Image (tube, rainbow, N blue to C red; front, side, top):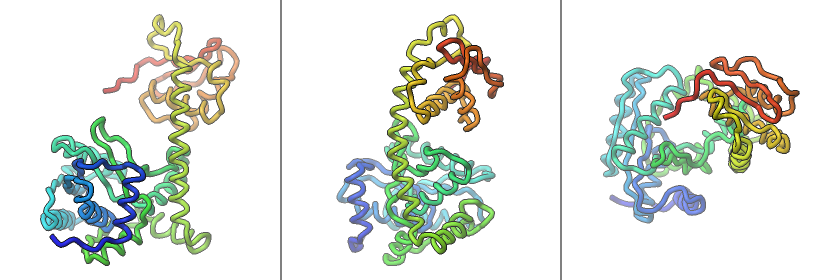
Length: 340
């Protein structure tokens, strides 16, 4: 195989991997490839860096069966994998998913199953700075806090043994398109990416161009930078919240005599800033109710930190009720959270 010229994107990705320690040397990487410009750019970059890093690479394609050409799309990705001489894995949805969220969940489940079965330590995706900017706007419109606004992160665990890694978060979609054009890599155009019934497509094709035209030509880059700033701040706040949670729940007192109640020490929480109080309350609700609590639910519980004795909330999900007893805030849970 003839190696292509070393481009600025090769150098940039190489520096990013060294700086952020995203991918270890001599590891097995499973690349999620749709056939679009971002995932093909990523695949070619990793393929060209393979010798320097000693990786074993493979390509995986998930066919959602959303389009009439999805089978041809999958065959194209398979052909590229064969041309690049890397193993190829494909999964086709038995049932067509109804939403982007369901599709994403199915895709990560499939990729994790392949990686676990075949022994890949990393699943690598082609998300870019453009995706990061779009996700920040999407979550902002939905009312997300800082955790949602940090949008796509560089890496996160999918299982205890498998990491999801996004190494292109400093590269935008214009750059990946130029890379593919310069190296004459044919891109499979996904018609659903232009379907404006999807909110993310309206953000991509209407909102961001509007912001660039009317407010800031570098709006996409600025939004991606904001997400990166928030990522570090969220990481710091989450560590503080974890430490505070452990202190507040260290001694539950009468919990053994009341197995259907879980509590936190209000005195410990009163000394903390509101931002940390909210994070501890969110953790508390997640542990007890097994759901992602809403802002309103978190606020109801946070209010009780300084509320008078015997104050209580109206029922949460599953008829759980929070109430104050002296220095303690108790959550009566009729049915305990069950986790695997």
